[in-house]
Structures are given as C-alpha cells and as structure tokens.
Amino acid sequence: MKSDNIYIARLKREETDFEFVERKGIGHPDTLSDALAEKLSREYSNYTLKKFGAVLHHNFDKIGLLGGSSYVAFGKGHLLRPIRVLINGRVSISFADENIPVRKLLTNWTKEFFALALPTVDVENDLEFHMNLSSQSSPGKTYEEEAKRSARQRWFEPRSLDDVPEIKKLVANDTSLGVGYAPTSLLERLVLKIEEMLNGEFKSENKWIGSDIKIMAVRVKDLISITMCIPQIAMHVPSLNDYKENLLNAREYIKKIVADMGINTFELNINTRDNYELRELYLTATGSSLESGDEGLVGRGNRVNGIISPLRPMSLEGACGKNPIYHIGKVYYLAAFDMAEKIYKKFGIHNEVYLVSQSGRDIKDPWKSIVAVPEHFDKLDILKQYIAEQLQHITDITTKVLHEEISLY
Image (cartoon, helix red, strand yellow):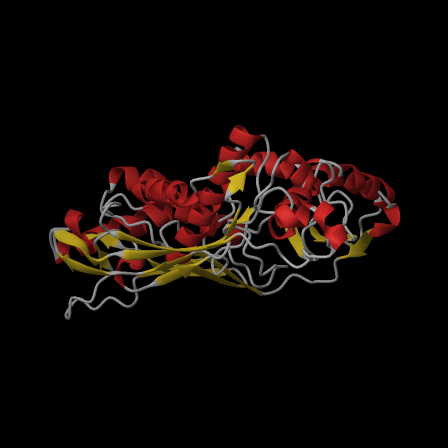
C-alpha cells in the first residue's frame, strides 16, 4: 500500500454544550427493514458459499416493509390486513447449470425472521410478498466482441468460479465513503443500554412490552433529557390501570439504568402522545407500529453503530443487505468503526476514521484514508504504520458479517 494515501488530520472540534442521540428499537419498521435485509444477504451469502464455493453477486439493500392494519383493545389484538414485504434487489439466479430457488429461499428466510422479530405475527397469513428482483449487471457490461471474455457478461449467472472475479482479485464496487469514530459518548452508551435492557432483561419478565421502542435523548450541558415511545402488546394488558402500571414499572427500571451509569441530572418522558381520556394509547397487537400503516425502509434508521448521532461524522449509506464481500457502503463503513475502536484502545485517544474508495481499486488500498486525532497527539509515524497494518486486514469484516458477529443496526 502507498503510505501517501494515508493522512493524519487534527480534530478541530471543541466539546459542545449540547448533544442529540436517537435510537430506533429492534421493532421499529426501519430497523426491521435493516435487520431483514441483513438476514437475507447473510443467508444467501452462506448458502451460495457452502453450495458453490463463493458468495454470489447480490444486493438486498432496497427492502421495504409497508404496514397493514390491526385491531387492538385491552386484552386482545390481531392484524386485519397483512404486512407487505417488498423484497427489492439484484441477485444471482443460477450457477453453472443449476438454478437457484431464489424466491422460495427469500420467502422462507423472511418467515423465519418475522417468527423471531414479531412472534405474534402469523407468518403464513399476515405477510404479503412483493418481489422485485433483477439479475441485470451494473454499467460496465457491453456487447463488444472483446467483452465476451469479461465477467460482467455473466455477473448474475456465472458458469463457474472463473466468472466470480473477486475470488482472484478483490476490488471496490463503488466510489464511496465509510466513516467511524471512537469512543462513544456517555449519552450514546446510555441510549444503547436503555433499549438493549428493555428489549432484553426487562422483556423476559414483562411480556407486555413491545419491541418498537424509540428513544430521543438530548444533553444540554449536564442535563440529560429523554423522550421515549414504549409500546404495549394488547393481549398482555387487561385494562387501562395495567397500562399505566406497566409504564410506571418501566420508568423505575430506566431510572435504575441511569443511576447505575452515574448520571445524576436526568428527566424522562414516556409516551407523550397518550390520551387516557380518549383511550389514545400506544397499544399494539404485535409490539410494532408496522402493524398499523407505518412503513420501514433500509437505510432510514440507525447507523451501523446502532444509533443516530447528528453531531458525529455520519454516512447516509444503507449498509444492511449490501454484498459483504466488496460493497464499500458496508465493508468500509464497518471497517472505519472497527479501526477507530482499535486506535482508541491502543493509543487512548478520541479519533475519527474516514475511508474513501475508488471504484475498481484494491479494497485493501483505499483511495484516501484519513484519521483525525487530537492536537496533542504526537505519535504520528507509529499511528500511520498501525493504520497501514489494519487496512491489510480489512476483509476480516466480511467473515464477521457472515458469522453474525457484527450488528449493523
């Protein structure tokens, strides 16, 4: 790798008096879309890797979920109209002389996903599938005589592993940007912890809580303010009094999380839209707003570190569902966060990592690698060498993705 493609910059940002952090919980329609897209990509990748010896070309990063409608009342709830699953993307449909049962596989994997993500959904009757799949190559495929030797001609219908060029040489599929930073702030850690605990430990003892938990946190100087939406699953909520009691229990649980993190100045608002007199409540059949008209799309929710932090460096890439072998919008985004965390652990400094690809360039040799560090840090040559070493392991990200060792949402 050319060391002149690695730049060490200085962090010019001063600590701000305010901070915003948002988290869309695992049952939010956008997060569900991300999670489904990632499952389909991972399952397809492992399927083709095991069966044919390579991850075949695919992208499922345009998946959408369109809400149905539901009936809810205290003690009961069910769907009236199904959730529409829009599986949009491109996918290899054959290898050599063998056709791949793509639609059947995607349907089965989607049903597996919903059975775990929203257990009250009847996967046989409450899901309506709309598949918009293509096997057309990106620009680069031509019909010139010489192009017959090009892998682009058989991009989604390889005749053999010779038609899967990344096996021999792995290059970036696009000119794009991956960003990351470390460490996370106290507010960021708090938001992640609250949602994780509510959808984990707390849920194991409180069946009424839905997974579509949304958190907006604001810090102004030392005051942390949080507004949350916490859904309840109707079949586990017999009355309005139970609904109120559940929220009180959740409030006390959250206050304990906050206290355990050493935060003293704190205010909490939950379900601010509730109107008890009119019975306008966050009461659901499934635990997610997806059941009643809400929609979700890949890339509109949390960034790959699980939160939305507008004052931090961000990429607008929808990473979930992208090909984990060479799609820069996934590989570099994850690699940037991974490198930032390693730099923080090794050197003990706040840092930001920016990896810029160039379409067709060796994936281990980004066009530009920029790491921003504090003004006082003086081990620049050592850091630069460390960055160069880490870039040589950038493809380790793919293995972690395929083994589900990394969460992207």
